[in-house]
Amino acid sequence: MKTVLISGGGIAGTALAALLGCRGFAPTVVERAPGLRGGGQAVDVRGVALEVAERLGVLERARAHRTRMRGMTVLDGDGQELYRSTESTISSGRLDSDDIELLRDDLVRILHDRATEGGGTERRGTEGRGARFVFGDGVTALDQDEDGVRVSFEHAEPRRYDLVVGADGLHSAVRRLAFGPEERYAHHLGMHLAIFSADNFLGLEDWQLWLRDGEAGYGVYPVRDNTELRISFGFAGEPLPEGRRDPQSQRAVVAERMAALRWETPRLLKALAEAPDVYCDTMTQIRMDRWSHGRVVLLGDAGYCASPLSGQGTSLALVGAHVLADALADALTRSDGDHRAAFTAYEERLRPFVELNQALATENPGGPAAEESVERAKNAISLDG
Image 1 (cartoon, rainbow, N blue to C red):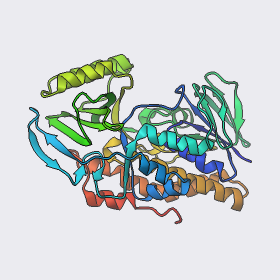
Image 2 (image 1 turned 135 degrees about the horizontal axis):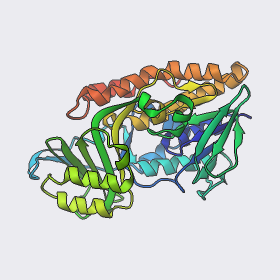
Image 3 (image 1 turned 30 degrees about the horizontal axis):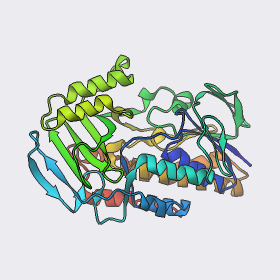
């Protein structure tokens, strides 16, 4: 049984763990956070990714957790209504679509339950009948040879694995260790995004609000049966200097850039200061000529982040996990376990799909990509191709 270390316990890594566990592999997931990460925005499972969810056996549970928006209002800088829609929202697209919008933390929990077949979420070393999850640790070094990879960790003793998968996001440690500095592959799209949770002090009921004034704006929508809000701040600008990337400095920068906005901005900034779960980062794409090096391969945002501007990051993670799991399983049975053949097949099948979906983020800098472009991109691969 081949051992696979997956760095990153988000959507991509957890989905891959579930898929490999039922294909004859022994996957271990290592995640820096002390447990499953909470917070985050609503994400979309679209097109072919719905079929991945069905094959994983999580589609119905994902549907049960979907958001239930009735529509949205778009506001000017003073909070005056420009238009409203009961047919679509900015975050999820058409409301009559079969696509699913749900909270990121709900989807990760659903995938984790599937990967471990009911396993727990203790700090380091939880193990169900499927994948093993190690929380509160991270990869610090990779030493490859012909037979495997010796992996060093922040806390645990070094261990050997047959393969290593970097599914550890935009700022992937595995990518840095195996391929070099992030700057070689990161392409900044000129925007920043901050997402956080708050009580529903606006009293929204299954309805989104979006405000934009110049190069800054925000979206607000209720979740958890209208008891909470998810708030997304966006603003234009260059990447923050190295000295301003700690959480407190990021909050200060966000507050500074959003302060000129009017309407409910003061109350939203107060919620930002009090929020327990702020995520802040640049809108960046990762573009690489190859996603594998020896026995190390990249998955999801680590290898081909499309940025939230594409609306397809979750679908890329799920589809990428399925294509990689299939390629590895096929190599295990047909080519004497040759990981090189598996990684080549993975890249050849997935790259056109990735490129089409990454293009969604730059098609319309002022807003979402055209509906026909999204429809084409989200279905641009066959799982059995």
